[in-house]
Image 1 (spheres, rainbow, N blue to C red):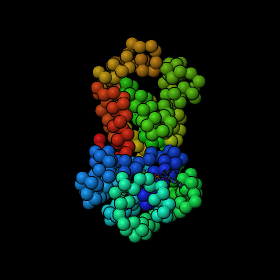
Image 2 (tube, helix red, strand yellow):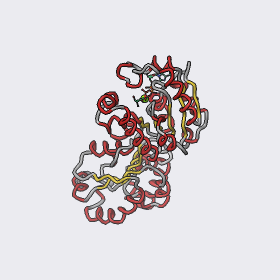
Image 3 (cartoon, protein in one colour):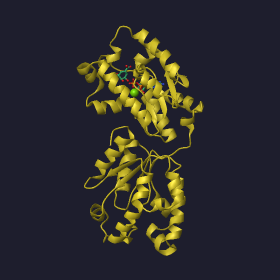
Image 4 (cartoon, rainbow, N blue to C red):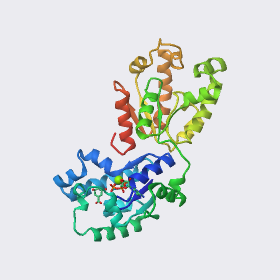
Length: 335
Ligand SMILES: Nc1ncnc2c1ncn2[C@@H]1O[C@H](COP(=O)(O)OP(=O)(O)OP(=O)(O)O)[C@@H](O)[C@H]1O
Ligand SMILES: O=C(O)C1=C[C@@H](O)[C@@H](O)[C@H](O)C1
Ligand SMILES: [Mg+2]
């Protein structure tokens, strides 16, 4: 992961969003994940349970996020107080956004709602933490006199492996026709502010004809060839990638799926048949009658499951509900 550390107001969230956009990696903000998990905002939690309880929850959450799928991770300003968090940073690319105290105070917003700003030893806290951030970091970026965009440029220019790695999808969705991949993919991409690439549509673009037509006129073998080209290319670019139901039968596609963040959207014939509408107007999926769907699913289930980082059961659920679960998984929530 590309991990951003620094004092409150250093620009971790703002610069993190710019780096996420540039690298195609999802942005995860530990304060946001914690707010969701704690069920209330951080100042309220500090008031009701005290700082020690907050630090424990913060430590556990961050250690878990650091073990999770790749991304840009912005850490809360006090996170490095934990030796477990400092140890868990090993092997990640850590960037310290170095900000002077007066500048940070100018940026960090209303001090009355910031538990850690309401203390009289702030200059000492800032000086102490600055050393801890620098010690943990692979790169220190002074933010004084630089816009957030310039800070992001400085991070990219330093050539850290994660910031400059070849782009790859934030998440790849696999599953049979009727799993809801395209609908869920569009919702997830929308929330992450990134593109959604459907390999079926890419095949149509390459072939210059509807996918069903390629399948019937040029034959399945030609269709699979185009699908392999389109899918392997999509898996090297940022965004959310929705992989056509049969693509996993191709060994090159399975190879390209290795080490990706993959969600298998699982579904049974009852829900799939309802969602597809087997008698609706001609499309790729209406070529698959009920029995063929079942046969394909039996053969492909192990391939979907093998490729998957997570499996999500979509039976009886709306696309929005499934998309929310996928987002939660990406942002370190439990399944
Ligand atoms: N380099 C910069 N120059 C000027 N303003 C900036 C810069 N970086 C961030 N800001 C602004 O400062 C404010 C705080 O930035 P941001 O929320 O990204 O900081 P943070 O490190 O995530 O702080 P927090 O402790 O709240 O998580 C925002 O209004 C943001 O637009
Ligand atoms: O500096 C800190 O100790 C904190 C910073 C914020 O990011 C929050 O994690 C919380 O307000 C504590
Ligand atoms: Mg922030």
